[in-house]
Image (tube, rainbow, N blue to C red; front, side, top):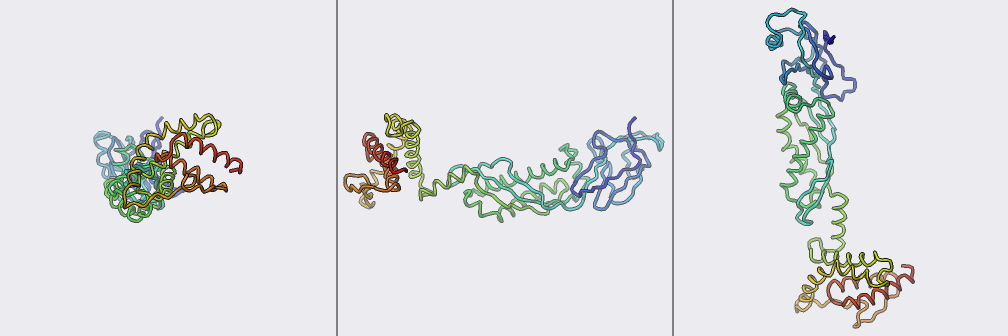
Length: 350
């Protein structure tokens, strides 16, 4: 036999529940004359068939057709006081919920004026207060079909993240610049999201962007370009990447450059196209009178300075990569010199 509720009430011992549903599943059977007890900072919303029947504020209330006139249409005009009607009651907390957390579950991809594309992550906190319980239940429960506190908070977080993503895209700033704009982002997100919350009977009392920055992969890309000393010089960056790819491919083979030479050939296959593309540009720049002459590097015939320490030998190997990428030396000379100095470095324990 279905349970008939004669007394309807809810005591939130945790103080953390935004909404509590009675019964937890399905519809309950309520009787005309039943008592509804609503605590301070609560509102009780009777709900049925996607429609809020009435709202009860703090105090003790008796269910009658006067305070829920819609019941006449639900149970018919001829009924006795024992006739139950089916509905759900949502106890809505009207207190302010503060220090609720939000964050990006997955990184946001943005167009970056310096890096081309970048991925950022963000986190922060927010506060809300339900100011119109009937509108809230109609919009959240009736439209969205959610009533658990965890689900409601998840819905609120998604609203904030949507506005943050839109705002970051509109600003057109680099991820490097965004890291120092948390205050501007805080004000912008609150202004954008406040209207969306109000349309659901909720006051967005506060929202804070506590952190926004690059993901680990994007941070590595920034560090790598910064190490080139030319954040805006894409040519230098691509040249460095070509040389790095050649060297890594060469060292992946068992004997490195001292082996059969296959490793070097594989490296050339990966980076030679970029080396040729940038080599011609660099040669043209060297021929211009206004440009300073390139300094003579170690290992060249013009200045036969002999590296002796491990650090100097390593610098010589790096220099060989750059010279090969720029087209200053042939692959044959590169292979011979690289094998010589790599062997010397191994002898020194480098």
